[in-house]
Figure: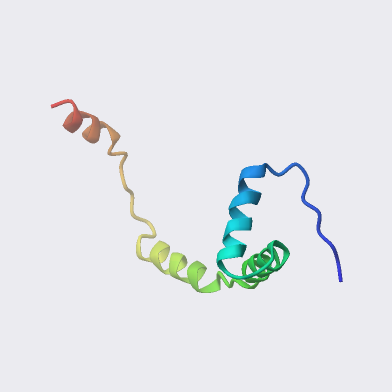
Length: 76
C-alpha cells in the first residue's frame, strides 16, 4: 500500500485531528485515512451541473458593478 508523508504541518491541526479521532473512537491514522478516502470519493459532477444550469440561465445578461450604489447607501 502506498504511503503519504506530509511535512512541516503545524502542531495545532494535528492536535485538533487527534481530538477528533479520539471523539470518533479511532486512532489518528484511521481518522486521517477516513478523511482522505472520503475526500477522494467526493463527486462534484452534480455541483458542476448545477453551476452550469445557473450560468445558462444568465447567459448573455450584463450585471453592472453595484459597488458605487452600495457605497452611496453606506455613506448616508
